[in-house]
Length: 262
Ligand SMILES: C[S@@+](CC[C@H](N)C(=O)[O-])C[C@H]1O[C@@H](n2cnc3c(N)ncnc32)[C@H](O)[C@@H]1O
View (tube, rainbow, N blue to C red):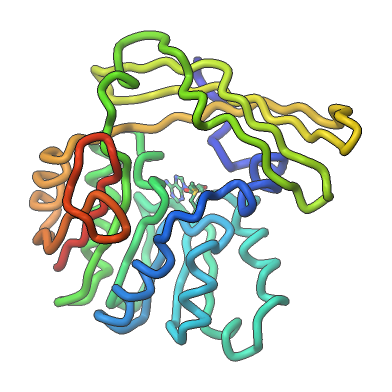
């Protein structure tokens, strides 16, 4: 199953429901405290709708966001109106790819939140993105990123039962509900890649389905020691690795949260 377009790339239910569909990860406080340690400016790669970016601007940081989805960036841009002028003036948004970007300035902190790094589907792409990030971190600055730690029973070869934990109902800005169902999951352990087919439905208060869309999610999973070698290969020194945003130690099947210095 090859997707016709990248996840999050087109206008539709996935993008409209993005903000309300996010669990409270506790990651905003984490990135904010890293920014306090390093100072700005800050660069968020794959910033999406600005879920993390705007709170960092509110905390006083100059922040540049980059994303390859114009639809997601439009949502981030719309939030300017919710913020005071001096906060809005600290935020710049740019359409672009985290594998290939160029800014003149060098950043105290670069981060890639909410598993966005896993949208890079090959080891080469991941390497290219980290090398590019390395060029943009000022000496002594930090790179932080978050991926999931693969639970091997969900990564078995071929088709597996989709994780029902991802099925959910969330409010949409229209006042209707967004129903997400993962219809199918296929794993390719050779490429370390999962492919999921999602059905998204907008449902009104009477249970009537107003819209139905399908999206295909692809992600590459990475093992903990692979990440160690990847950071080293790209010129970073690992400062910390956590299993959760509460800075708990690494743990199998949870999150991988990495902080590396240049
Ligand atoms: C799960 S969302 C995360 C958005 C935001 N960082 C957050 O934490 O809410 C993943 C985002 O990664 C972006 N993305 C995926 N691949 C990308 C790439 N190669 N370059 C830039 N953005 C990318 C998508 O467009 C999407 O906005």
